Length: 114
Image (tube, rainbow, N blue to C red; front, side, top):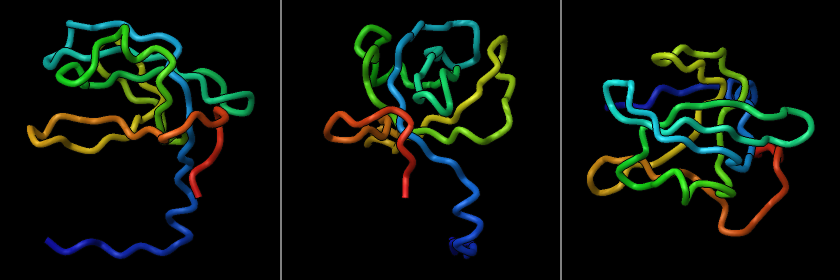
């Protein structure tokens, strides 16, 4: 499979920020059980909601105060009864289950990937 080449200007349109999970609730009403997240992206962006299919690797309790990286400028997307406002980024583990991207040290909410 060949990667599609994009211009750097295309990449700069994607707003990728750091936020801290302030609420995480297990949600069973979707095809694949998920966790409903509220993430604080700092003063400029504010608090955003997301639904993530991450229950194989995370419990809702252990997610509180975890910093995650997400795309904050996609349009909201309806996922079941939830309106997802941010796409949290993850990489697949050896079982193809998501592992959230997170910095190794605590940083300021809202900082932008560059």
